[in-house]
Structures are given as C-alpha cells and as structure tokens.
Image 1 (cartoon, rainbow, N blue to C red):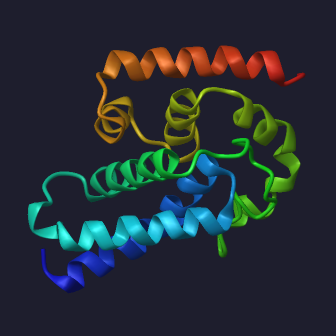
Image 2 (image 1 turned 135 degrees about the vertical axis):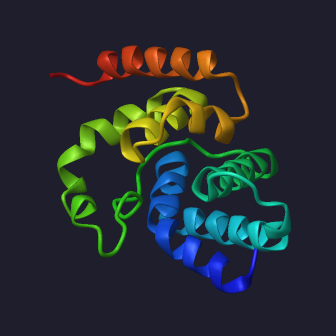
Image 3 (image 1 turned 60 degrees about the horizontal axis):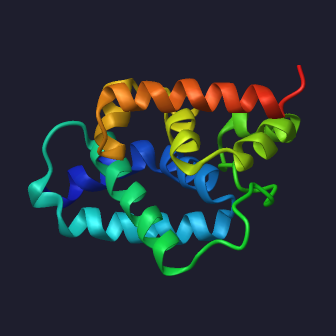
Length: 158
C-alpha cells in the first residue's frame, strides 16, 4: 500500500478508532497511546494489507489493547474519563454526557462483551467484521452481543 493511500484510509476512520479504544479502556489519553501504537504497527505491516482497511486496522488496535492489558493490569476498568468517548468534530459525541448510565454499565461487563457491543452498536460494524477484529467465530460474536445486552439490562434502569 502506498503512503498516500494509507494516510487517506487512516483519516477516514481515525475518529472511530479512537472512540473504539476509549470505549474499551475508559481513558482518552491511554486510547490515544494505543491508537498511535496501532497506527505504527499498521504502517509497518501495510504491505500485508488485504480486505477491509477499517476491520484490519481495528484488529491491529484490538491486539494493541490486549497487549496493553497484559503489560499493565488495569486498576479498575471503567469509563471514568468524561472525555473518553468524546471525539473532536463528532456531534454525536458532544452529547455523550447524556449517556453516563450506559458508560457505567459498559464498564461493568466483561471486556469481550463490551468490545462486541461497542463495535456493533457504536461503530456499526457487521458481525463478520467483528469476528475478524476479535479473531473469533461469528457465532461467538453473536453470543457476546446477546450476553452483553443481557448484562447491560441488569445495570441500566429503563
């Protein structure tokens, strides 16, 4: 992949990438660090790119997130940073303060369920792409989505 195409592809999905990582780790600064690491890895491996760029980049970012979890265990995974889901220039994220109950509930569910839910509902990715990103079968993604929704119902009062 040529440099210009890589830059163009990254620009098209960098806000979504940051929001995805911030949703997983709950810390905007850490999300930026992980995104930067993912972008460097992606650039180095860009000759091996095939398929959907967004799914490929999110897979690399998810791996960086998992690597970070293994290096430094989180004190308490939670969406405590009010800027964690805010992405500059995204009008939807400007209203994120209205979804505090959802953020707290997401912080309480298992990481794999949270990842599947964020990718499906926040990033509007199909199950097939989520399966690629998480490196699991599509049926397992559906299971995580179902369990994640059930867990969220327990924590969110409607």
